[in-house]
Image 1 (spheres, helix red, strand yellow):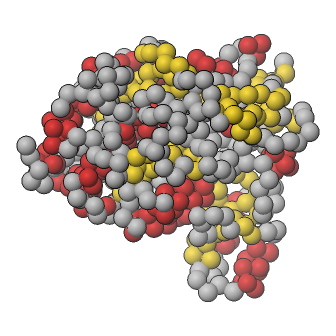
Image 2 (cartoon, helix red, strand yellow):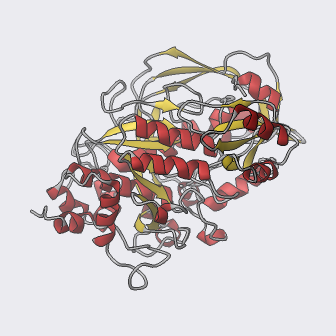
Image 3 (cartoon, one colour):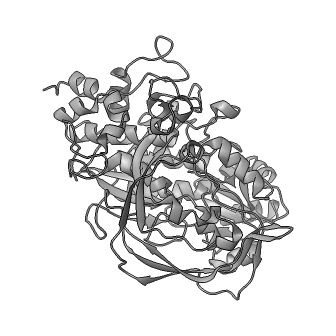
Amino acid sequence: MTYSGPVWQALRGVGLAGVALAGLLTAVGAGQELQAPVASRLLVQEAALPPIDRGLRDQDPPRAARNRDDAERLRAEAGDDGLPYVRGSVIVKFKDGASAGAITAATRQVAGDTVDRSSWANFDIIDIPDAADPEAAAAVLRERPDVEYAQPRYLNYAMSRPNDPLYANQWNFPAIDMERAWDIQPGATADIIVAVLDSGVAFRSGTFRYNSRFAFRMTPGGPRYPALGIVDVPFAAAPELGTSGSTRFVAPRDFIWDDDAPVDLDSHGTHVTGTVGQLTNNGLGVAGMAYNVRIMPVKIIQGLWDEIFSSPFEGTDDVVARGIRYAADNGAKVINLSIGRSEGGPAPVVTDAMRYAVGRGVFIAVAAGNTRASGNQPNRLAQPAPDINGMVAVGAVGLALDSAFYSTSGSFVELAAPGGDQRAGGTSAGILQQTLDLDLLETYDRPVSQYGPPRADSFAYYYFQGTSMATPHVAGFAALLMQQGVTSPAAVEAAMKQFATDKGAAGRDDLFGFGLINPRATLRGLGLAR
């Protein structure tokens, strides 16, 4: 099966949902083609005007929360069929030694057409009829002796005192004693690469030209999102992360657009990256955990604008798996996964990639999920954490260091970190970081008469909440430990657990895991105290 951008999108004729873990709908339902197919995205300018910093924004708490409940509501309003997977294909990994004849027989057994092997994949995609049930097809394939695993293509969603002037608003760092931890290990160094697998990162400047050929979300009064035609979208590097072209950003990769420009058009990935490694002690804005690390931006989550502009790929399990393997093969020492899904079945293709990455010396932090207030369904990507030494599932605490109301609980939760709880403490009880200016980015929230293309070159400071925000604290913490020579992923996990601050029931529990991360106590416990 070959994906061909707008042609593939036109043939499918339907968009399925992928949702940012912090809670914003990022895909919409049936589309109507209004223009002849042309290239969906073209880089027309390598540099744009300097980024605009619009300061601290005190947005209303529901928008700041961007929680899972809002995602479910918006997804229902979008009018799609609510399926947690992409129709028309399944993921399959054949056992070593499977013959060409066996692969052909398996494909025919599910009325399949073609088999596709993508880059950074040790699995295949079998094209099946759109009317077929991918879960049933995967179940048939799993019964074959020549198949290691098979699954639908489930969709995932985006889960020393610094002198930075807004640091006083960042309660999360004092809560885990980061100031004294930075006295021991200030910010890691460029020797450590942290891969942020998310909706992209605001890491470079330029202008994209998009062809918006579809009208989305049809209503009795017409489309909620009319086709925009050919539009130019300026984008810029976030001032608090680094300048465009900086050597700080390494091996960028976009698995949604299949190129090397993983530009964030959602805001989630940039906010998450800030907590990992926002520039610190630079007299600007806010701080980050491991502020000297290098960042590998890897885009594996499709934002709403990506969908509107007809990106050829979505945030399915196979895309996530390819992103993980790519990061492991290109020098990452830490992977941050503030993403996941609660719908659908297990994700063996992702678990396989996680084991591959840890086997190559990469520590993984993954969000536990945001569903405790709405059914407490586990994040399927986080569930394998207890069985993978070197990967940690992260729950969230609020300002009072209690478990946040949304933080998914379960036997797979291993550690907790600040994620914010705006229900208990208001807007400022979220996690503050710089990201894209939502007023200029989320123009799809405006009335239809004011709907227009976004700008991704303007920035502001926002409070978000979610296990998405907790997870980069752990990823940044891992970078600090690796800088001190604790390079084995399993050893990093063991040290974090051993010196965590016990919370909730004595010992390990399903809300906090082994406790709240304590970077200073961990560094001291390793004999690095000052």
